[in-house]
Length: 411
Image 1 (cartoon, rainbow, N blue to C red):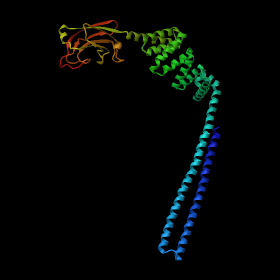
Image 2 (cartoon, helix red, strand yellow):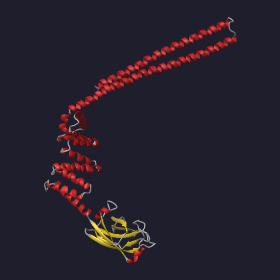
Image 3 (tube, rainbow, N blue to C red):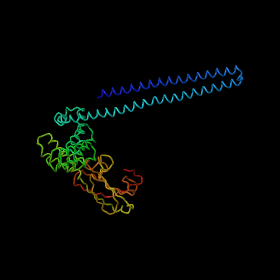
């Protein structure tokens, strides 16, 4: 069909060019004829003025004035003829140009749209054969062109049958393979809305959401996997992904639980089972670290009670004795009564990569501040630091027994 489209386009161009050529020549001839007539009239009138002067009908001054008037009229009439001709030539150019444009748009609308529809029809016709290839073990040999044709055929099918959840599921898989993530998500969502209990949709949809790496999709993926496991509690892929989602959400207990269920479904000596056991151990270790707590009781020396500033703030914190001064955990609260008792854990970390669970030793400290700043200032009251091993069940007592002198530098 493209051959005939080219023939039509070339024919239209030739017609337009011929029109321009003929119209231009005709206008040129008309202009030449009118100017020639005007010149002949001009020369005739000149001769008449000369004859009248010779016969004594016009004086010399009158004859000169008549010639001047004749020249002016001749120039003015020629100028008007040229302006009229320019307008006519412009019109003669725009008419065929507009015709060529209209014909081109019409040809594209007719033949271009027809060609696209022909491609869509061919894709729909090839859909069953391509489907067997794309969805079989030979999918690895599918070319990008075949995938595009298959996707086009699916779109034609869905335009006719938009309530087919399987077609939307397959279309989501194709869009995933073509790295069209947004289109794939929309397709899986439509398949899910039409049939929320289809295991393949739940699993594929959750996999895609996790592949995006976007934390906003974690909750959605978790709900899809939970629905899948309600129907099939032994689904290995579902258990694996659910553990991954929980791990990403730092729900170590849920991750370990999901992976333990997965391990029961796998041969004990398989590589996958070994990898799952390592993942379980990692989650359990992180769970133990997350529950790691330190109990701290703070008192004050009697001689320093009167030096406690009004509206005082107390900081109880832990640092790495061999690391940066940034606290691994800190509790800040108004000083209201004695003794002060606090519990420190990873929940009190200031930075995600510096936590109690990441240290081998804890340097436990306390400070009473008058300006609500943890940095040491003159007049602040400090406790003597206590160094202990980082392990569960630790409890420490601190005594505020030092005054930061005026000349002291901030720690």
